[in-house]
Image (cartoon, rainbow, N blue to C red):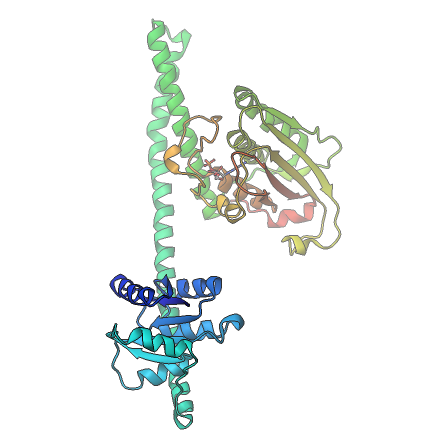
Length: 429
Ligand code: ADP
């Protein structure tokens, strides 16, 4: 009994061949296209591969050439199956690396015997005199396919960029259009709720108006985030720079987030950052960036967890390029926001900084700023990164992985350059 991999996109053909070969005592593995075929072949190391030539993506010739280049699969017989009746198809299949050729439609009475022959060592070859001509033809064919693919990818990329610009424009227009009516609503609400305005509101109505105020605050936060992300993308984030003490920024961000942590029975343990040199930055924007990081720590950590904030001054060792600061050789301050939460899988650790990217199901959105796993709209980290990068710094995350049971936690690292010489690269819009 042998294990046979059948690479074929047509389910009816797969079923037929599977039945025939299983009746003959073989085990049949299946793959629907070239890439899956390569993956299954690598994992399962079959005794023989039946390769349909007309498959989507990489065709059967290319898939064969690839499989034959994998050392542990180079001796696995690959038999081409094709309904193409063009002259030279058989030779082309053999040139690509196939060891035999079975024309389609498959003769179910013959197939088990044909397979047994190839399993037993039968090999077909292109006559030596024709080999180099077919090789030339095959490589020309590959280059043409490559050219077509590059052309398709270039077009698709241009289209994606166009869509991305449209999306950015939509976000910008929507945020600007929403801002004005929100300001009007907030203005009237403030008047209505002002005890000195003289409105005789009973408790029920006051409660309802406070509910509206909460909703408006939430909407305003979203609109502000949308506007910020638009500015970051357009490079027009206004930074009001001045010398700042790290301790004031961290203290301010902790004070802002403390009520949310308290609602969740969490502790925020922050170093006092005494003795740290000043940095040159925008106090409000840095406060916003650290608030976002701490707020995420609260949201993605179970009740009773801990958020720690600590740091270090990293003195210049002239080796910054290794850490992604090619042009910077001065001192840096590093601040770490560490939580005891659900953690983040390695493959998501870069993506979470993309705007609107969320690991979980977006339908689980919550309007609360503190609810466990209650995400916002996926802009918090994009904004934090935009602000930190505008200060010439970097932000990244370290985590063992995502595990809501064991809670391995996440560590967000922020580095900000100290040296005034770096001010040159601040982006001031
Ligand atoms: P939001 O929290 O509004 O969804 P963010 O940009 O702040 O958007 O975060 C993007 C995603 O990154 C979140 O939806 C969450 O899945 C993940 N994430 C962010 N911070 C943490 C953290 N501290 N622990 C675990 N996951 C996090």
